Length: 86
Image 1: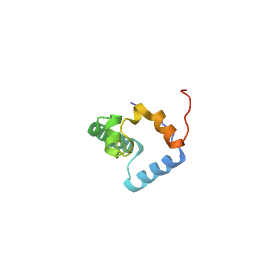
Image 2: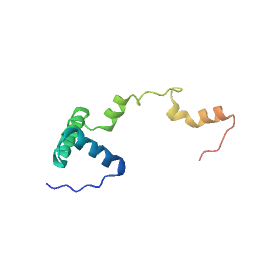
Image 3: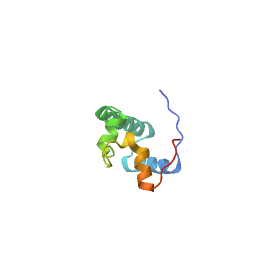
Image 4: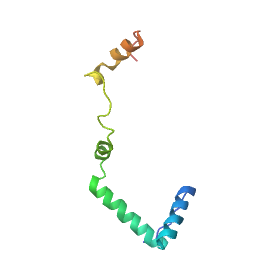
C-alpha cells in the first residue's frame, strides 16, 4: 500500500527529528508509528469510555446527588432566581 500524507509544520519537524535521530527512512518510521498506535489501541480497545476512565477524567467532578434530574432547580438555587422551563 502506498501512502501520501500532508504534515503540518509541527509534525514535519517531528518527523525530520525522527529521521535524523534514528537514521530510518520514511517508510520505516511510518511502519513503526502504525505498530505503536495499533498496540496502544489494542490495549485500550479504542473505546472512548475506557480512554476517558484511564485519563482520570471520568468521576473527577462532584456535585449533589440527582443533579442530572434536578439541574434546573440547582441552577435556580445557585443563581438565586427561578427561570421558566426552556
